[in-house]
Image 1 (cartoon, rainbow, N blue to C red):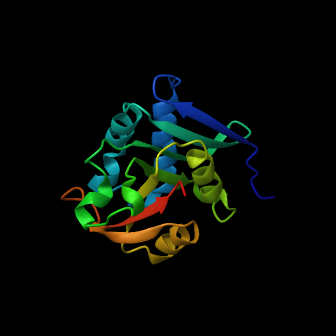
Image 2: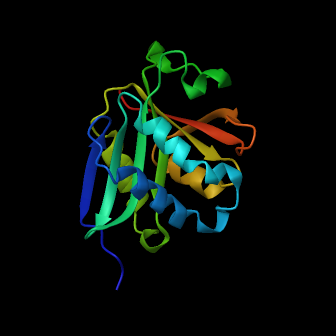
Image 3: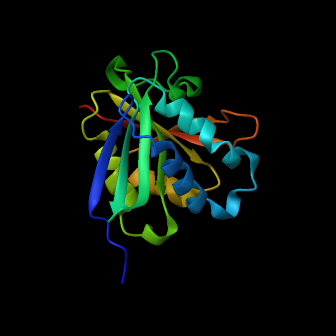
Length: 176
């Protein structure tokens, strides 16, 4: 019997339950179990603290009964700090308010069921920004193709940390 996600729960900065941080860390450890010896992945707790502490942080968690199956989270980027700026990309019409999709993560038992798209759509559904931006490891072309099928376009590459992968910067218009 395949797992079945029955519940999407929304969370926001300032209203996070006490166990929220650890739940995200546990889902990450399961999703990246084979890569947890990589120092970049070992710093995931820092990223959770960074993103969840930002004004405008939002997260959608998928649950199968009481078991978290995956999540998507992000936050608006400050004007001038948008990830696409370093690529030379210029948004149509000069509308630049940008929401960064920092993580879309699904645990192995719930993959290949459309869960990542469902989480992504729920995360962006109520956003007021003009653009969504995300980063995709350039060594994962199938993931990049998935995001392209959701309306994203690659606008360049960047390596945000010395020990991080090189990422394709992908942008999607949310308005117009």
